Amino acid sequence: MITRDGYPIIMVTGTVLLALVLTAVFSGTFWFWVTAGLVGVIFLFHFFFFRDPERDIPAGERLILSPADGKVVAIEQVEENDYLKDKSWKVSIFLSVFNVHVNRMPVTGVLESLSYKKGQFLAAFNHRASELNEQSILGVRSEFGLVLFKQIAGVIARRIVYHCKEGDRVTAGERFGMIRYGSRVDVFFPLSGSVKVAVGDRVKGGISVLGEFKA
Image 1 (tube, one colour):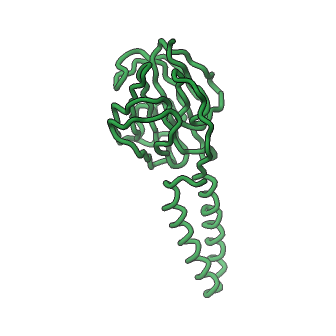
Image 2 (image 1 turned 60 degrees about the horizontal axis):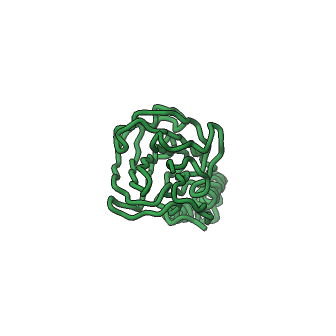
Image 3 (image 1 turned 180 degrees about the horizontal axis):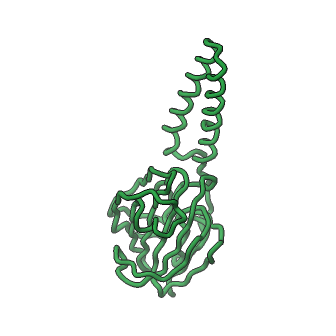
């Protein structure tokens, strides 16, 4: 399954590829064939990059799920002043170009806060990227507590996509958008909750449990 956000890019690269192949056929120019080959590789890669596999969402009302596939690169206690407005757990996930980039909601609740901030394009694994890079900031109020999460652009990723708005009722594990190419997601939740992952763990969006609200 291919995410809908990938169709425009696949169509554009496919059109360019077709034009190059036709030009190479009628002109017989070697370099047109070389260029067509390179574009062909990019065209095929996009089918891999924009894949959107189905996921079996784990049951558990208090669970905080990973919004993205990737590697946990940091777990720390921070002062979160945008939405939780309290000291919180922060779990950071780095997505390489080989990860699934479709993002999913970490909890069930109401999307109370949604903002978009322009910024820099530092490498996504750089911890300063959380504050300085272009990003979307989403806050959900669940029955058991608040969760804030950020879609953060990286050096290559310069297009953040989300299909939701303030006031939406959201469900844990449902798709809400993606970040194109390498990127980062930060998740914040109350210190009263427990962290269920460790630095270096590989996680999957909508499947892996990052944390759990206090019972």
